[in-house]
Length: 121
Image (cartoon, rainbow, N blue to C red; front, top):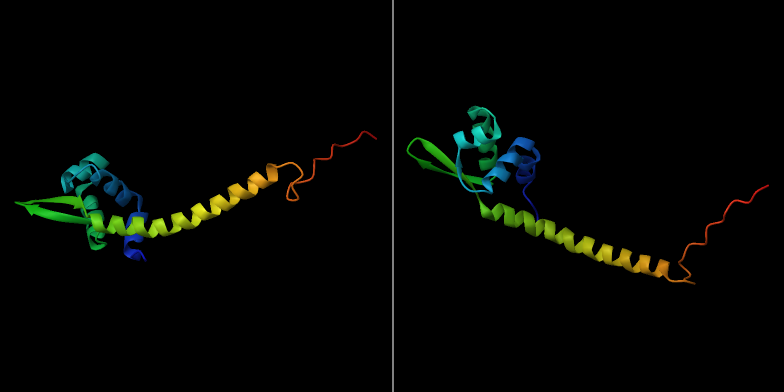
């Protein structure tokens, strides 16, 4: 499983990430997005174009308005990709937990030696 670099690049810009977070609440027009994020409408349009080119959002034209919403598939792909790393890290954390439990057992060969306290001269 691989993730399109355009997806990661689009999400790396903070304003675009804020737009994605906003669109999680539901569809919005460009004007509503600009208003809620306190940016100018041309800025919002520019960021939405990048998100659209990356396949993260889709627009529906109604009269002279464009209503943007998230596309589900790219986020499912991203979750699948991250999930492959999740299992890798879960295994490593399990191994770390086992190692730490061994260290806490008295007389364990893996246990660190007791701390030596300084003596007065």
